Each structure stands twice: as structure tokens, then as C-alpha cells.
Image (cartoon, rainbow, N blue to C red; front, side, top):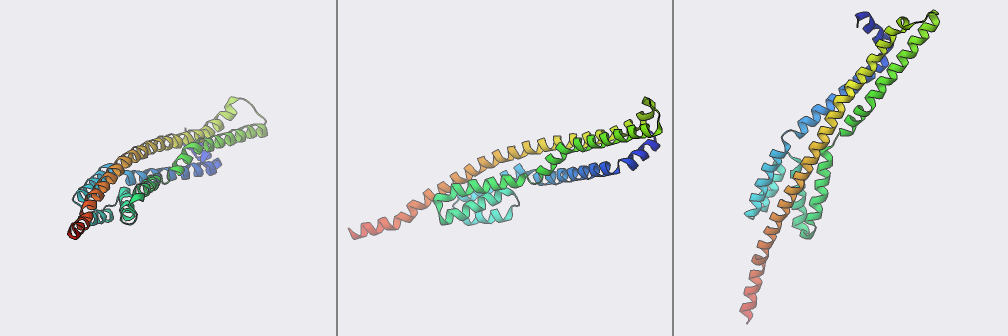
Amino acid sequence: MSWETIRNLVRDEWVILSLLLAWSLAGLTVICERFYALWNIIPKSETFKNRVIDALEHGDVGKAAALCEMFPVPLAEVFERGLQVYQKTPNKTAEAVTSQRAAAVLSLKRYLWALGTVGSSAPFVGLFGTVVGILKAFQSMSVAGTGGFKVVSQGIAAALVATAAGLLVAIYAVIAYNYFVSRVGAIAMQYKLYSEEFLAALGAVGSRAAPVASAPAAAAAQGTT
């Protein structure tokens, strides 16, 4: 394609190309942001989970709560909510952990709707530009009063670039969207397993605390006999 053809394309289809450029920049921004947000999140969450459970196994609930404030992972919010509810109403801990885990997984899907929108709409934007370009080519042919493929071939070829650009934007956006959806699904499954381990550790803390709390009462009962 000659530079003259490219200049004509930019001049005639600048609205469509500008829209596709904006779509492309939006898609790349979301991809970079999600890569950064999800990078190495499972190993970090597993390290955090192991330290919290180790603290609970030693009966140190305060240390577990402090770890939740230190670690910048979404799982920390889940465990922190669980510890808060456990200290007030232990029987509702599992429900609180489940709801907070769902909120954490939802936050991992942030901006993916925009990436899906780019992937689904970019081909249609490019196709719209191509249709407009072809209409302009045939209009020019009717004004000139001449016919034949050579008259409209250059205009059609330039117009098809809009479709190619739209498909290019859509391809990487759809691939990235499917990857991130799969990635979030894997993280959600890991978080479910981590939460079950956390609840089991909390249950063990409660079972150890119950006999300790009942010991003074038993001693008092023996003293009265």
C-alpha cells in the first residue's frame, strides 16, 4: 500500500481509525493493569495463608489479625473479615468468609467488562468503516461517470484496512479476556480451598478454648461438693 493510499485512508476514515485507536489503547491499558494486579497472586496468597494458619494453630489470634493488615492480597480481606465476625458471633464466621471471598473474586474481574467490550465491538467498528469507504468509492465512480474495477479498487483496498484494524484489535482483546477469566477462575478455586483451611483452623482454636473456659467452672463445682 502506497503512502498516498494511507494518507487518503487517514483523511477519509479518520473518525473510524481514531475510534479503533481509542479501543486499542483502552484494551492495552486493561491488559497491563490486570497483569500487574494478578501477577504472582497465588504464591503470595499461599504464603499469607500458611502464616495465618500457623498463628492460629499456636492460638495467637492477634498475630493472625496483624498479618491480615500487613499482606496486600485480596485473601487478607477475607481472613480479616472472618476474624472480626469470629470474635463477635463465631457461628456466622463461615457465612462471612464466603461472602467476603465472593467480593474478593469479583474485585479480581475489575475492568474485564471493558476488555470484553473492545473484543466484541472492534470488528463491527472496522466493518462499519469499510462499508462507508466502499460507499464513498462507488459514489466517486458515479460522479466521475466511469466504471470498472480499477476505478474503485484503490478505494476498496483502503477501506478494507479498517476491517483489518478492527480484527487485529479484537483478536488480542478476546485472547486476553479469555485468559484473565480463566486466571480469575483458578484464583477463585484456590481461595475457596484456602478459606476452608482457615475455617478449620479457627474451629480448632475454638475447640481448644472451650475446655480451658470450662475448667474454672468444673473446679468450682468440685469445691462445693
